[in-house]
Length: 114
Image 1: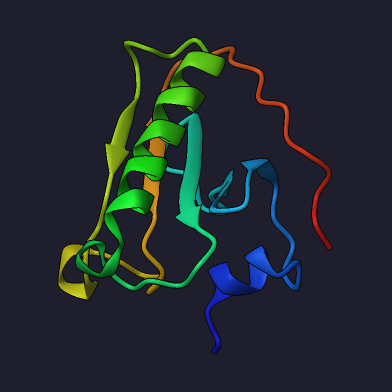
Image 2 (image 1 turned 135 degrees about the horizontal axis):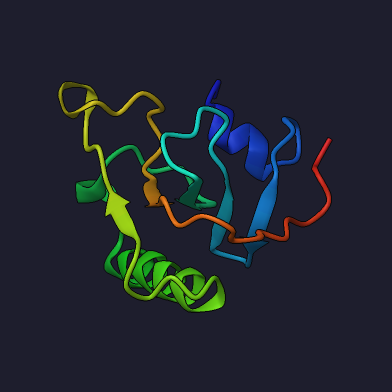
């Protein structure tokens, strides 16, 4: 499979990792559209929201809530999901865009994966 997000999950492509666990990985968008722009992705490859198992939907939403609390952005963030090419999905690996234009927020990333 030639999915860039799967390659990031496997450590084959570099990414600025914010957090990760056995089901989810969160990393910086390389073309940010906000001061803070993180991508919340399942480690396992699914193309659309309709393919995503319910437990991963919940895990992704819980991750968004955790990020909001950790960065103290409880009232200043948005989640965007582009489901399918017609909706603007560029990478065919389901992901949420976590974005905020809050200034002065310091994000601590894990070491860049190589």
